[in-house]
Image (cartoon, rainbow, N blue to C red; front, side, top):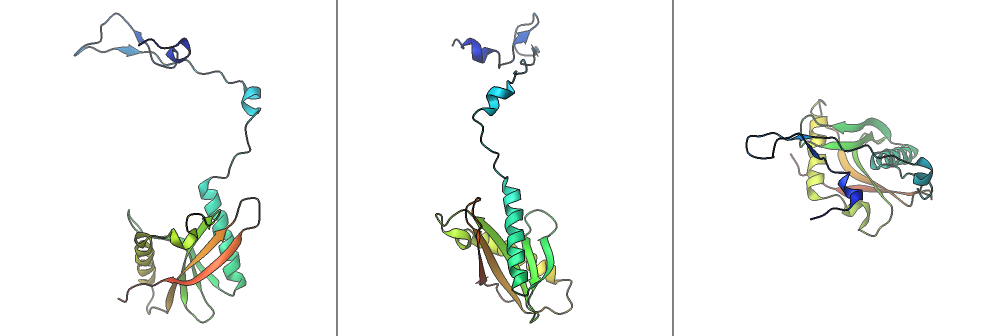
Length: 174
């Protein structure tokens, strides 16, 4: 197979006198570094899109602001259990009545794939429940608890809609 000259320079080439065979080493050259013309690269480049982590953090900020406006107090943000396979809870807040609320925040640009609530699988619910149990181990007496979802929906250019779904899923009794 014959490569075109433009793609040949991207592959390493053999140097040295040794044939490539069993027990013999072949020395490879590094491919040449491509030259960039910044002016031509930026001609059609769009503005960079925010990364997923940044979008998630922004959604958590908006969700927390919404919950605080409703009178809830932040206890912990981004609580993680130790080790792999554990759980993570976006927000842990307390209502004025004393109920501890474990909040999963979901950001969606639209409702095309079922929205935020549909995106929380049974496995994700179990991980949140496990993390909630882990968090409550430090408490002398467990308070009333609830699992909520806050959905931040909308395009990046418009102010998003914040939807608070109280009691989105239940935890088994222990």
